[in-house]
Length: 283
Image 1: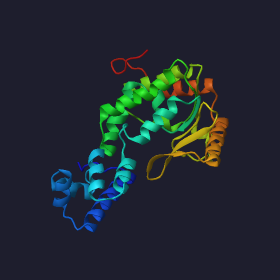
Image 2: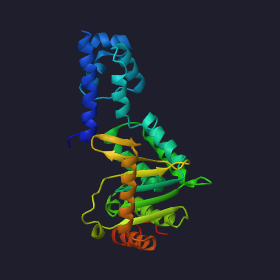
Image 3: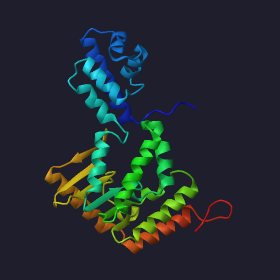
Image 4: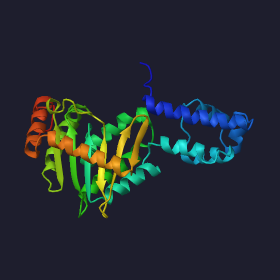
């Protein structure tokens, strides 16, 4: 079986980083061996970095940037590529969610804050073949995100879940059954408003991936969303944030009510992951 290739956007960003390293190195008229010596790594690592086969660690990227006098260009490319939770991007996202008074979430996958630990592990294990990074660090980060809604004074969490999110198989049938039932359980919490947008009700509506709009303690709003070729971008522009908030309201209008959503999820569980002796542990 051929090796699984990384997703296009991620591979492209790795290639951009490698090309930047090579361009800066050649501008200094350095060989790969010279750069390797300057940053205390074997020259074969430099070859792998430049060809996009491997991503340098963040501390290595800093040393490369400094040695090539890149003025932060190379490190910025590395930082934007980073999928590990210690990156500034994901730490900023965690802080923003933990400090929010209200969060509006639109997604076509199970939101991390409503995952079971088993679903989290299965999803992240699958993603490692595309994004790399530390599995345990990512699991710890997801647990911290889940605690956002478990705090003594949690934010109000409104979620529009496209029906497709219920169809994406992650892990075993047992993991999926428990995850979908977990969504029903969490939807009963006073601060959680979970609604399903069915295929039948979404004709003409654009699935934009994941969009998050949150209200800060001072009443101002910010947003985050998937964008092509990016692991996600923060949005502060008032007009764009307002448009995304209106988009959430539009989808909410078309989505099922809370009780209807619970019934729809329960029906999905019965259809796709029915309880059968010797195959599933059933509540």
